[in-house]
Image 1 (cartoon, rainbow, N blue to C red):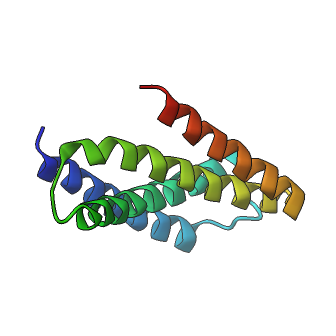
Image 2: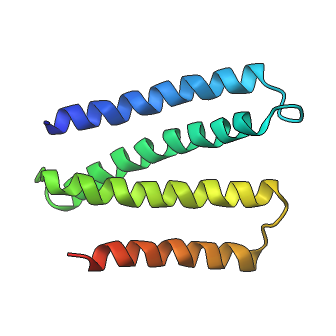
Length: 123
């Protein structure tokens, strides 16, 4: 697969997820929604944030390395953007269930950081 196809997939995923999020926000009452609708809400937010961060991170890595487009930048960028998106979604969920404070957030973010360090050490 080419790099353009991967980037097109990221753009289209973000656009489709944004459209689904707009449908959810306009048609669903969150106080009476079942649990699977809330799960779908968090999934769409994840599918908006993750490709957006992946695209920005990929282009920043290409820019930082003097516009040298290397296909190897894509997989670490996708992993890092998925971890950051998972962190954001996790913090939003903890806020929803009223369990978020600075201590819990710090431990959660450190755990995600340790997961990234684990993936970096596996070569």
